[in-house]
Length: 350
Ligand SMILES: [Zn+2]
Image (cartoon, rainbow, N blue to C red; front, side, top):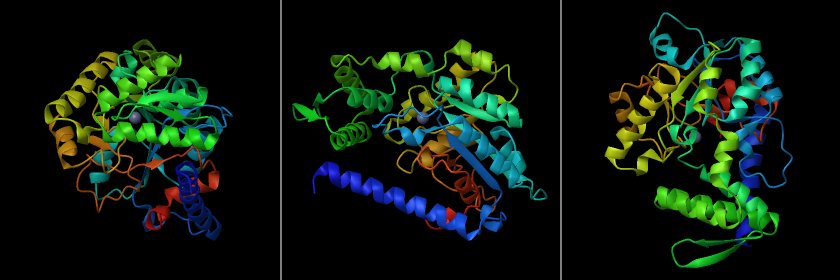
């Protein structure tokens, strides 16, 4: 099997397993009542909130949900009896053993402009607070978003000239399978090599194909002025997402502190308050460890969120610096899946 077909088969299998599990829980109605498996509630993660774009090749589709799905998801969470609260309120609420309510927090990573255009009105409709995690390097147009750059580049072109470390190579991306393989190879290059160097090389490859990586940031990320306007809404709050969005587990200690403290200081400039919540970029087990959570706590953050799936469980919570979140995934936009996810049951199986 070719590399492209193999990765397509793996992707398909993984999606089928997740979808099958969610369907099984939804069909069994095991999630009808939020039982002890639902713990003390959940934190949901979103990225883009915007209408479907209809691209055939959209490798970042999982990072994008429609405003209609967000509306349904909030409705389901509230219908399950979850109490919506701001993320920064969670530590105090979960530490109170006399309080057995279940909570829900909504968070959005990266600061996409569509959050203000499409998500804010939905949150306002339901009077639900939300936290947007901001990377000042994006806001101030000094850092590009490699995952968006690669998607735009590979969608547009039939081949990319790229040096993975053993000299320039022509990476084919004519067919859909080739585009997926090219995306995955380039994304992996960022994750295993020096991230700054990899981002610079991807930017250069994109520019050669007349894809402007900084224009993508300009088109998609809110400016400081836009953030200030959004914050006129008392439901909106900003959190920190580092200065340049690196995998923190792979940077020096000095840079780790600079990334988290520096982002808090810059964001304080946008919103006149120092954020107390941090979202670790990428947020997986390979991006957040003890060193990173200790650094966040030492630098005054009272809440740290990962992308590791799970519900809030005050019994198991050792620290608020490494809270799990449930991704509202663009590939699984079904109302019945939200209830299944909030029940906590999928995390016993997936
Ligand atoms: Zn991010």
